[in-house]
Picture 1 (cartoon, one colour):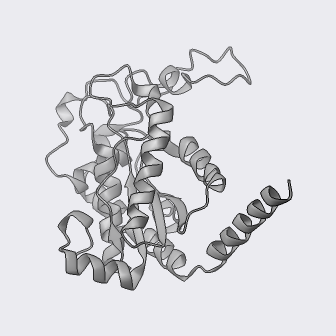
Picture 2: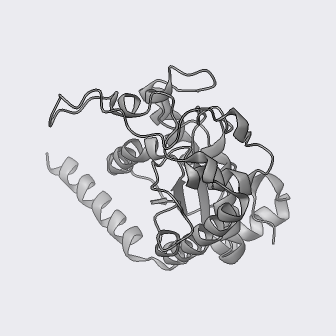
Picture 3: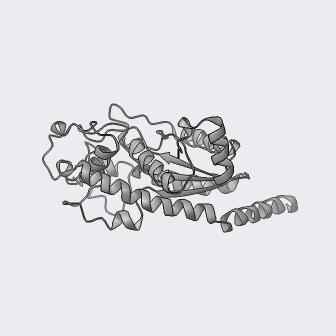
Length: 267
């Protein structure tokens, strides 16, 4: 079954939207992943997971959305980073447009760790506006099957490491050029700001990994990546089913909106 928004014909699109009512929105980033991996890794991989999952639990999959939060990598060539207000505004309009095309539920699937706080804040902000659709958020690699994989040989750093190198090898064969990874491995956090105990700074990631690469990339393989993509897709298909079956959050959202309206009327 075809599930990719950009590949569907109008009759296919209308049928799938009407029958399933769910659209998956994969979000990644355009940023440096060391010297050996493509800029689009996060979006390519999360979109692959979403398409595989939708093949198991049918719904429409939006094309990969590239423009997440990536301030910490804005010093690198190849990074696209929008101002904060523009990032939020465009993303909000995107959700509205997806809903306008017939979807009552939108599942955002995050494939870039740097988006996490931005997306959680964005989700909280949805309480400020009344809409006729419900938004859900999940992380592409947080499920039990993915976490249970025992194929990794080295501790992960979470970025351009053995795991992520493997994922992009499987999702986009031929895009990794391993001989361009010339940093001594394992690539460990530098902690130059360790003297700032209990103090948060927006440069914490850059402090630890100034080349935006971690762990032991050379241990990556397409076989490991295929196993990881399959596990992530299995996990996500279960999330899609949960979203489809959910009636509690839409009802709670309507109740919340009603109370907001009542408060305004009583002021």
